[in-house]
Length: 291
View 1 (cartoon, rainbow, N blue to C red):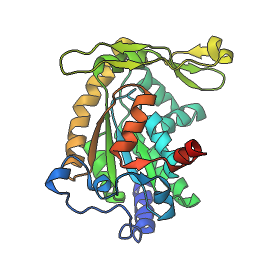
View 2 (view 1 turned 90 degrees about the horizontal axis):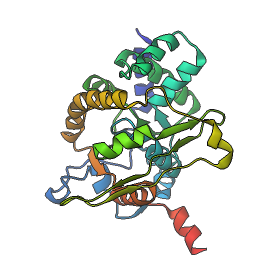
View 3 (view 1 turned 30 degrees about the horizontal axis):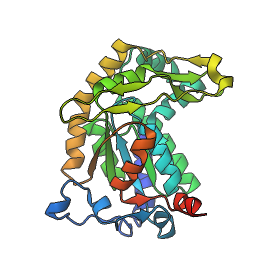
């Protein structure tokens, strides 16, 4: 039995009793709710984020979206808001690279060429993370960057129920500019973006403005660019992603679990609209504003 198979067996057994007691249920939505997954449609409008914690709801969500669209940013925000771990396959890969483990040299070649990492490698890394989370008693999760293929989606379905799949979308010209503007502080590891994206509206499309996310003064001279953030590599990565992602989107769409969200701009504009689409409000922010 492989490491992944052992992790599946252990994790599936430990979660089995939770699957029938989940606060987010899956009744077939009405015709007016066909575009809204049941996990969202069945929540009262404006559900406070605290209700997920107070009522013991297991949040088992997935974020889909092109590389660079902002999955990590929004998944991390929701993770903090809802009190569940954010598991990003990109972080798992970077941790393996920095550890100089047995997969490190192979991963370096794949990343530098802008290729997508194989299912076998991702599954191996994720299985280790799931085992570690189980040992710590984690309940629920938000997955970022997994699954990205039908094979991975089928494996994940065999392990646990996914409540909701949030598919983030951003028009391609803005996405490419955003990827090319990414910068990392070589000292603190902070992520920034020097691109100022201002795309005029055309026809039925509204103007899109995304201001740069500039570093603090002490990081300005320490910014580096990821080796795979070149225009050719970014475009090839997007092409490969689109080929593999459509079947995954259809996989979850057929199960009434896909919520498609078009990012209207930067974080200040997109974050409150995403919470609105999820029928969630941040009650802590409301209390702060009222104080």
